[in-house]
Length: 255
Image 1 (cartoon, helix red, strand yellow):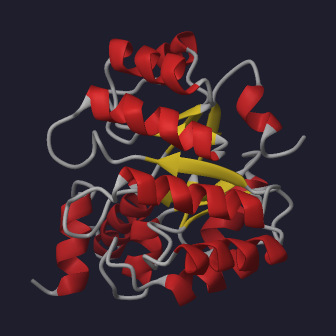
Image 2 (spheres, one colour):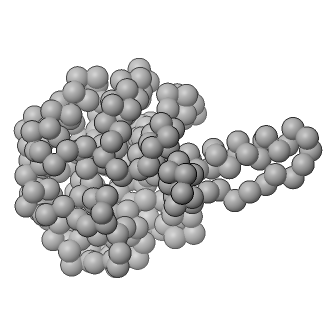
Image 3 (tube, rainbow, N blue to C red):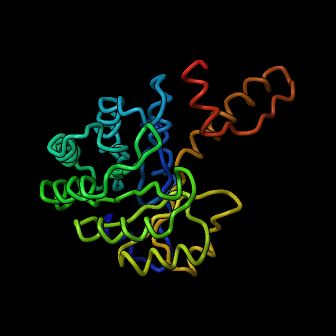
């Protein structure tokens, strides 16, 4: 079954997000039909902060390694690591040459703003022209950055669909009415970010969501398990909560 076909099954595709080859291989061996990457995990593993646009080489190196897996792989390329349309299309072409099945391309920027809609639509169209076989999951951060904005989300979802996107990703969306509105507006597979206690799998399945990503959760849980196991050597209770996204950003930035 192709990666695209996995979005049209009877139940939402659960897409676990890896940060290195070992985590990806373990998830594939466990039976997950496809693997994604987490930009936070990739950046933090390299001692860098997420969403800063400077992990292009690390992302390519991981993609090249993960392409050895026996399941489809989709790669988070943040905003494409460049404002130049041609650069993003070139990156997608290089990933496709490894056999990567999909990419995740976001409109959020490091300064907390959104890329201009026309520009983002142009990038999406250029990528699809360059690598039509690659599943382009167009992410909009209208719910992730600041106050949720349903109207802008729908406007962007329609524009991204018109530009040729294969799927829409709206991290932070949780409300039933918002999810239904995006599904109706885009008429494309909808990707929702798993947020414990807020985006339960059975409810999303009933709503018709196509894909549920774990984002940075697995990486952050792995950090939690590492600290707990280290304390366990002496029998000391080292149980700690999983670090938040902000905690990891602070950890690698040294602030």
